[in-house]
Length: 415
Length: 196
Image (cartoon, rainbow over all chains, first blue to last red; front, side):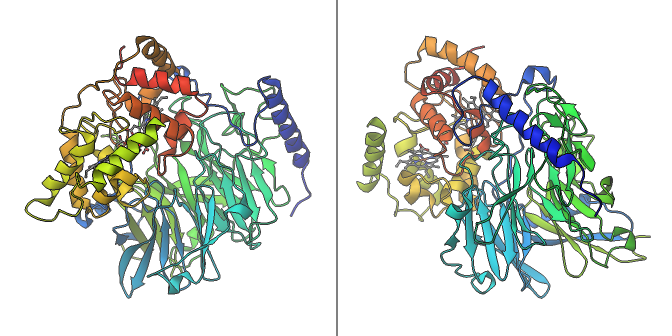
């Protein structure tokens, strides 16, 4: 690694400025974890004021209506339906015995998709949880992170019929109570710690920087919390670079200041600069000051993104690829699922892209396309997360259709 | 407390057998099941019971979504447990389509004109119409507010604000974060009969 840069000092100043800005507002002192009401000024956005988030069907799309035939990939790649019948399934983790666990948002379910020699069977493993989007697996235990709850199911793959009562670690993790943007993403880092995000609980507002808009890491029992990144609006996907071991995360940009942005981000946490400040709510993308929440020098001390991933595209899942099935040029690239825009008149995203990393920068290229019909301004599915499998193929979850697609490559095919 | 009293009345009705929870599964189960909803939600899906929402004219997707959440125990409504627990996806689709196709009628509660006027301003600044649409008729997963019962609207808004509506889409928690009881009341009086 190179010598430490002066950045830690500048983010420290940024945090001081943040705290100052809150104090200056002059209203009653904010309670812990406070965030005032959203400060969106919709009149200035010049967007169709009736744009709204898309609905997720709570029941399964029949197999013959899953839009497999719409999907296109670079030459030599093929897509097949890996499994279906898990409505709303988003995040994916695989257990040592090959079970894929899927988390959902509003449906409150965790699915287990079991591989029986070529056919897959999906079942509801857990239900009635509040947005269990965060899943992580370690030593045979499934960690389930619902909104501000942390549960651990031990020896889960031997208990798929009856997972029993979990170990409830909610208190130890002590996550805030606000719900918006607080469905979780979680993953184990190379340091063995559990990384979890705490989103901004608004579209745009002054957050308490000690609580919201962070990525944190914890020991397995919920102790030893450390803040890894600050000023992060809402990341729901991160992974570690296979060579440098550095954390890379996607981040969703704010809404209602125009169709063209600010763009979503792909960010990198430079080793030795854990705790750095990524700009929310004052500074977006590559240095766009926020029009609603202002401070002097809004972008001072802000770590700029490694790449912009597109306006409103909702870049969610990211995983680095270390397999050998895909051509050599895909070694160590990151695959990013772009869930697709709602706060944009002309829809964008609804695809999977590749991020090719070069030092601290990344270049974004299309990979899996076709689920967006740009002419009709309609979408057929919403890629949410990606999961590289041991054989080098890649799973993509489609939340809208309750399906997983498997992408393979063979040289000479499709030429 | 008024709310509790109403809830008890509803539950009692079910215990007294007004809602034949066990008597399904004969000739046309879905039709019978739909009939059983009317005890609480009104003959034509327009409720006349305090704190019980009207279902008539709701977007089909909204009804489908909420019924799945109730069946799965995500949105727990004690009064409804006996009538939703065993529904299949197909039953739920049929029920959602039935109520979506009924005409929404105005509630019989009096609207306070002053509150409604104040509510209109609040709704503008909180952008209720961006999701629920300007006439508050709803769409897809977003419910109709127009012609809904005022007492139910107030209660729903309070549940979102206080984080006590389980399984809610967090967009609504965000939309009413920190809004006072008085303002929630004003929003409800406006929302049931939105005037330009």
